[in-house]
Image 1 (cartoon, one colour):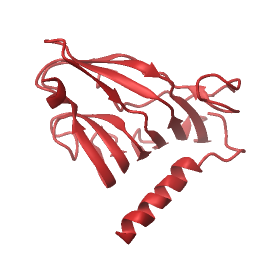
Image 2: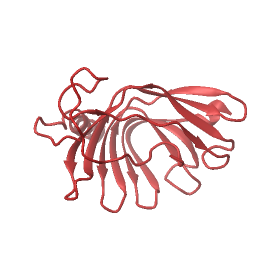
Image 3: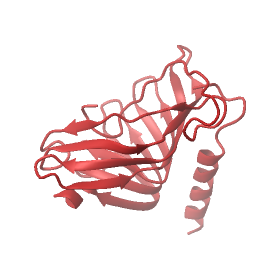
Image 4: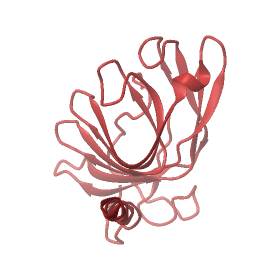
Length: 194
């Protein structure tokens, strides 16, 4: 129990206190894909929830996944609420993003493309994402995030999940996703809309 408290406290400190005033400004595979990382302009105060210097909108695009890739049926995802902002905390020597923090409200409507059954997934988690030079990513997350896993593509079975709690997500350069939970839950979205 003590270990969980220490891990949760450390993760909360990293996620909620990781934005120093001097910090640098900042698909077809479904959710949890790489984000663009270029020079980031300052966003005026009051735009979305990105208040202050260095925050910029980080909109999520609609996506489609064929049957058998995540769920047994084709799936469409589209944000219905998207107030996510990001801030680049650190860059690589070439100027690309090395460490980025994301926060804000995000609700994605996940739809069974065959039947029209849908579920509005609240995935308004906060994440610090480390972008490695080999294309891999390491996510430190507090709260819910939508994670898609292909067959043999991760520590979870093929599917589409809302992972909620305090956890890390390691996406290697091949796209293999390893979820390590400190504390939290997994909600199988394929089962919800089947």
